[in-house]
Image (cartoon, rainbow, N blue to C red; front, side):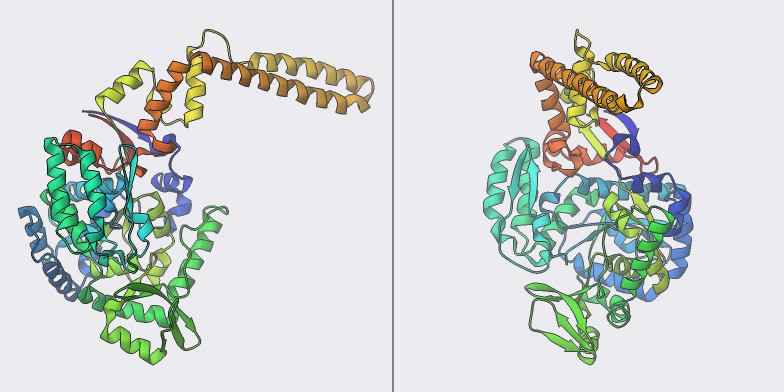
Length: 534
């Protein structure tokens, strides 16, 4: 295995906001709790330890005990479940939707980053305990976003008609898709392991929540990862006071809007919010639906239904059935930080962008805002792909070029003729400078004609250069095709590999060692993109 690193900014695949955050720009510092270093995480842990109540810890332990009933767990998971009962135990958390077969690779990277940070903190600051947590977004209702995955360039999509929270969706309708996918896996040893895992999770479990828990527990149980489902009546009891305030005061709406304005004033006027708040940032759950709650005067409506509540009725509903109230994307972070002894959230660039909208809301709610850690990102290259890149004389920086830019650069490099006509532009520039001086000394009215001619000549050179490059691409067709095939393999559809491809092709090559390889490769506090040749 060989490792190379490149800065996130240099890849050109990450926003200025995230790059500026990682560079700890002063203009962003008031919108988070500090740079995510090991030292700052430890300081956060000391604060959270004293801030987190015994009541919430007892409820958390009870909820997890119930959620883990009947699930085969590793010694590491059992140990961490016990550790959570202790006052000096904190969590490091990541969250994600219940993506089919885990969806794109970055799902795996988020969890590995969370585990690695947890273990590095444990080694450096052993006076406290740190437990990695994966928060399942079981209450999300965007089925389309989780319903497909890409394997070897082929998209496998789950088609079904159930509505409501995705965690409740029956997995029986997956059978035909699973059978089709298993044929693609082949019959190797690692393929057999995957098929057994698919059977134990998606086939044997009644709904997507249970299936995802089994699947993720199998992949990461040896690391002690704890898996939590927020759709839990015990946990919702502790969140109910915050849900009540959201219904009555709309603080999330006002605080987030104010913070967005401050980011635009203090950081960038062109900043566009990742998520815009609603007046009420809660949903109402029923067995087959998830309704947005809206308000008109003293009446609360379930949008898309005929059901409504008076203020008194919705108060009673929340008191008697807190599990029916579901936080949206902006309230879920608050819910998470209320019920967990959490010190950091591990997320991708888009997630961290919307968390940066939330600090003033947390302050208003008197809930400690976690440190925000960018998950590790990686490009996985097989030795075969690395050999091809070497034969094509591609550097690390070359790999991250957009495809057309890469092809143009390499065609110019390997051509036996000069394709760069900038020297002609330099000569033209001097000639037109001379013409312009003549016009200034004779008749200034000719200046428009000279400028028009200059533009025409420069466009002509650009056109010739483009035609020469196009002709040379045809001449070097074999080399260009090899470049395209390699780049498409590493950057499918021009996107980062981790945002498109599923982990299963790499699992077929490496088996259980894949997770160990990623764990050993990631340096969560370096905040650099990792290239892994295996």
